[in-house]
Image 1 (cartoon, rainbow, N blue to C red):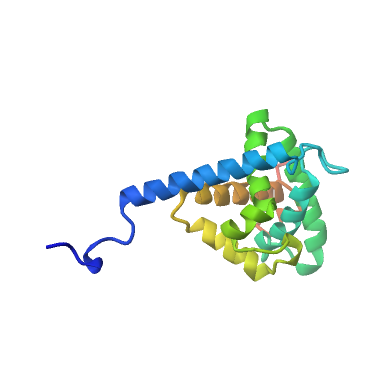
Image 2 (cartoon, rainbow, N blue to C red):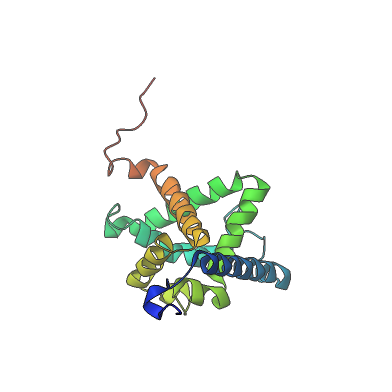
Length: 181
């Protein structure tokens, strides 16, 4: 007697491994394709040491959503720009290999062919609503694919370290600042 559909799991361990391997290959191919096609320039945007123009489009949409509740609405534009400067400085001091991996993540999020299927944001980042971006972040945070969970963790750490390393963020979290010596 063969098992019925209700007796078999929706996705077996082997099936999940195959899917994860396929997704990893897709992401690697997309990143490599972007690099080889020239979509992924290593030239920093004007006024930045490591962040590129495409990275700025994505990050300017993402950072306000991540800082929501930690920054007053009127201070958000300066907080976003300050966070970008701090993030740029941090990226500029990464090892070449870590910078390459971070840029690959940004490339996957910046290219329309990968952005839509992976994030659910089919248009440009500038047109994405805060709710769309929150949904993307929740989707990656709770994904069954470890690669997407790692991407979420990387984005969260990069942005939060860049913001909370800035003096203007300290008052919100109750940090009085470093002691005077």
